[in-house]
Image 1 (cartoon, rainbow, N blue to C red):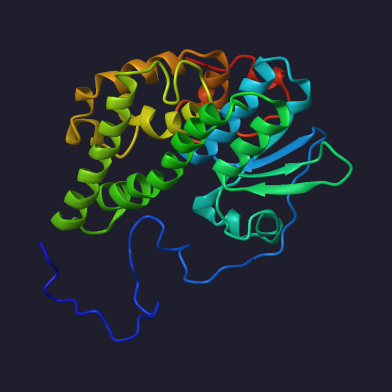
Image 2: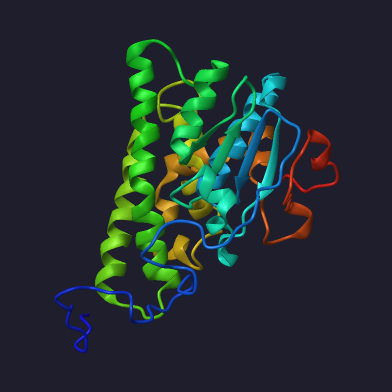
Length: 285
């Protein structure tokens, strides 16, 4: 249904209140809004993030590397409360000018440097440690294709379907239908692929699975956007469900999913992480 009261102006400005869950922090400008340094730990990697689907990509990857015995992948994880605008502090903007989580600092060499955007973090860590990204050109191309398929698809699910279905101040038929259709199409792409292979890029678990799992799994488990699982008939994607449950059972995935988590069961939250000992007493199922 169209809004009969709205006619787009000749030149748009941010004078009107948009409403919705994140209206108080959304602005059409970039840059720092507050001077504040980032906290620091002693590990080779410093992660500043939140356990949203994009943030979970980074923590699962780091935990998978540690699970494989790469002690050089030890990391400190600090929570960035995006609802309170902490992504707009000078310290965070310094490591991600786009003010989005996750952002990572690599202190493992002579000169520290930043990596921002979750896909870039996955590729950097995979190449650095030689894990979850094959070097054979055809296999590598397949992994990267499915990894960046997710990077391209995520905005349709989150900023598209999630926003208009769960967060927008008014519910309008057109945007909800538009993004529900695209979200179901994305699930169907994955479901058809997973009917032919164990993992998205083939028989081996890779960064393609790490990238896609945090976005698709919450729908399968009914943990995202209110009643979205029922609304989108997610149960019909049986191959995605098989894949989700297999990946969810991995010890590193169980750990990675609770790092920087600030909601739900208190025992399933690990707001700040410095070592494996921090998981003691936490619920990982």
